[in-house]
Length: 179
Image (tube, rainbow, N blue to C red; front, side):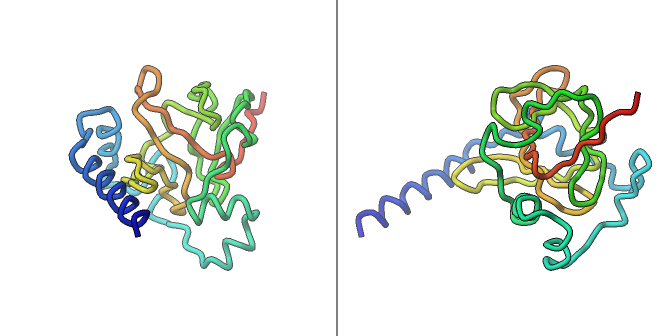
């Protein structure tokens, strides 16, 4: 009984802290407002043609790890993903739908163990959702084309944006730039 009360008290305090500490003045709050509601065509990608599939269809197309990350909002352990220490020149695309998300020239070593980027190719290809799971206040990033979970964005990145898109390797594939 005491453990339940302590647990509920911790959850309540975490929820109160999240509500009392809004950070809407940050670069992160500004990037959430970059979408263009009048247009569905962004740099040649028509975001109006959403990719919609059943769970069974996704399970047939994605690896178990891709499915867990992209469809169930999972994450990989730090320093285990195939792209956290990847340095080739090219483009990172959504593993589920192929939407181009990040260029390698925006990737940097944040030391967090996941691939990190300071900006997407086009912010309209990303949907930003508030995420207060696990008692943390974060901003989830998902692919605008297929609603696949990519990771989170934080306001502790380098110039010029001050943002750190912390992305699961399992949510992406890499297309090497042809010479």
